[in-house]
Amino acid sequence: MKLYILKADNSKEMDDIAGELSLKKFKLIDEDDRFKLMRKRRYGNILVQIVSLLLALQVSWVFLILNVAYFTYSYLWASPHVLITTEKVDDEGNPLEFSDMDEVLNKANAIL
Image 1 (cartoon, helix red, strand yellow):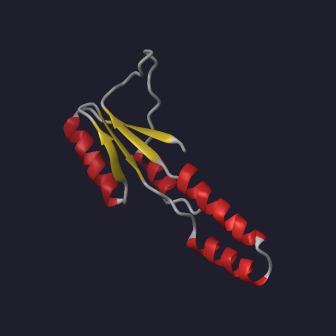
Image 2: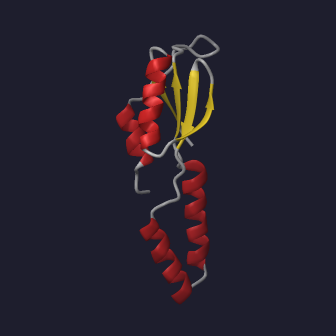
């Protein structure tokens, strides 16, 4: 799981970015005056899962285990999390590395 950080100048801009992400099926997990945390759950490519299940039925049960592993990876580790914040530095005073909206949406819509 990678955390993407998006920069907002004020709470109005934070709400606008959160609204745009919610149109792309991101769900709000947590929010405060200074941040909003959102995520989009990925379940994996449906075509890969169908082929894997068909192979499990016809060839070997090993494909079923591979399918479960692929789903687990997609659900737990490939699901993008986005932090929208007005902060510019972390708790230790180091500057934050911000992502852009295109990078976040590409990761959210990736096939694998």
